[in-house]
Image (cartoon, rainbow, N blue to C red; front, side):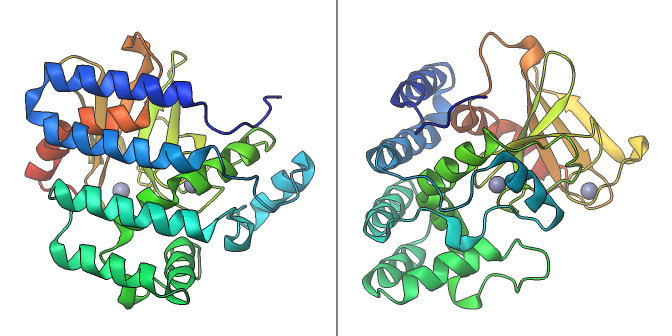
Length: 280
Ligand SMILES: [Zn+2]
Ligand SMILES: [Zn+2]
């Protein structure tokens, strides 16, 4: 069993090196790369200080929680509010500088950070909005999802890493994250041709049907469009029932393992192609 650790700074350095290389190869992606590097550097400052989640980490206990998902409740998350506030401000400023958010959104984040009672409410509403039977994200915080997600990443990935090292996900067949309830935003096709989904919020991974749509569970082959990128490094699965799509890193054709922060930027042209075809 792997000992859970704070994410190694070395893997961040590798991601930053790969991002810089990507920028050289595809100058069109320069702004997206620069933003991603800034976000990684901001997150890295906090990452090393994040503690373990306050959940019983006994493997049997964790696996038992899968009957009433998600495993990680809001109360378990090792959020340090001072660090989170710092990150939120930094993330919003970086996203604003790269035109990834509007000025009005930037100001709303500033306002949330100023009010000590609002921030925990925003984070709880955002975190719990994906839980089955929970209310959707509070209208007050709508449009802030991308900023909240980036700022919460060090806390969520730390919690998820600790749980992933001990839980047994063999029986988990759903399209949503067993740990935090989030949706996958990338998949990886393993050398054995399994498809693992990667949570967009906490980075947990779990095995899923090779072709089915994780968003609506449609598995009718003729209603799923799948194609590879020109270099064969990535695949895209588009569902004709719910009109959503998922990108995948094809590890069978790769010289390195999947790196979500790098691969999500490298596949921006695939996103554009999918959206042009009417998928979202
Ligand atoms: Zn998750
Ligand atoms: Zn679907």
